[in-house]
Amino acid sequence: MTPWSGPGGQKATWVAADALGLASNSKNKELAVKGMKYMLSAPVMDEFHDKFYAMQPVTVDAKYTDDEAFKELYTTNADILHNWPAFENSDSFYDVLYKNIQSMFMGDMEPQQVLDDTMEQYHTIVSVE
Image 1 (cartoon, helix red, strand yellow):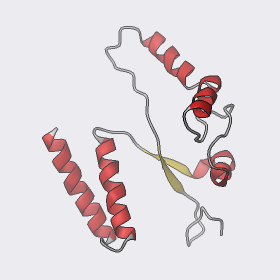
Image 2: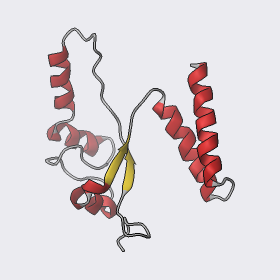
Image 3: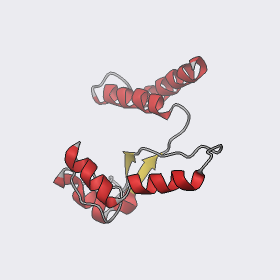
Image 4: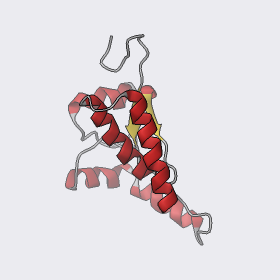
């Protein structure tokens, strides 16, 4: 069993990912897309990761600067990575979820409590904003 496989042998993991969005009312969509592609290009991302912080590459032609322990996951097991989707207030949702999962790991919550509490807190956040 590899470090990335579960008890039944199925391999899967998740990764939080940022998302770039293009407004439907953008006055110059072509230029906006060109700008996004430039920002995510290997030369720009390599420089960004060298100057600010190391992380896994966004494209296959970029340098790998993240922790070597995860390199195989990103380079040869990318098919088992599943991004958590972006949606309205997803940053708030994931913040609550991560905290509740940590509470579960510490023995303070049961798995069903994590799900119920996360959804309750998320709905409260969405209804307030």
